[in-house]
Length: 116
Image (cartoon, rainbow, N blue to C red):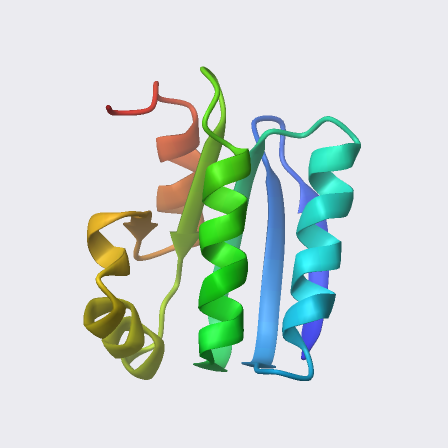
């Protein structure tokens, strides 16, 4: 798995490539926590290069969503492949997370107030 972090004026964007599985889920968690610890509370995960996500990866997503529940916080997923979208659907995560087709759509969405 490869994680690239960039900062946009409205959000931190983590571009994740490869696989998030039992061996790499901790790396994703560490990257997300580092962003939160530096004070960034608007996070976009760009999964356009992600081929697979395991239950360990799903657990990281849920834990992050719980951390980012304050007013002004945003946690958005984008660029899901067919396979990753299928896992999200089966896990019921499409009802929990804001998911956008592209990173630019996610960047535009993060500028808007979160919907309750």
